[in-house]
Image (tube, rainbow, N blue to C red; front, side, top):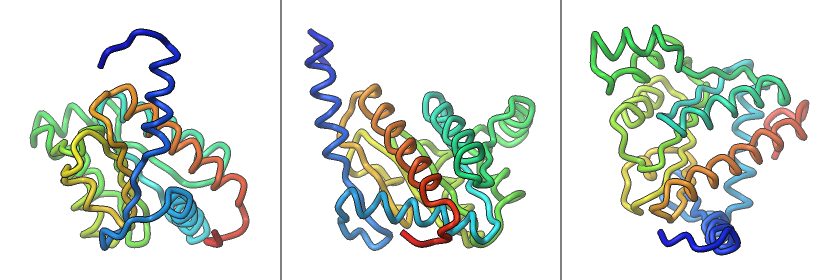
Length: 197
């Protein structure tokens, strides 16, 4: 990435945001507005059913997940949780390896009908992929957010998949952050409408 001016950076970021690819569980391409509305409807449906939205990510993606958890709980009235408490993370990674940290927590907490939102810039993190598989095995719906390579495995695992076609961390993470802000606002605006889109 050649960063010369803030204006050039923001233009490139805007292109990345607007070029976000959305696919459903069968790999069909969706317009971004339709994909985002479906994702918002999934969140509202989980809230109406008394379920939980679980959020996972590493590093900057973990920060995005925590921020979304806060917004869903506070603004949208959605039961949401993250698995980033240090004692639990260190215990699980020490005893079972870092690749297991989300899988083990999801095995413990997930119920059929819950929703997992998995965020990974690369779409290749072992612990994220294993967490998604555990969620699917529990009968959960899954939304993924990924970037970097178009063939990343996470991009094909969810019921809805948002992919940012960039290999620049900043662009991918800001795009993911903007998308989840939209989802939280969408869920809050439609609070009380159940799973209506």
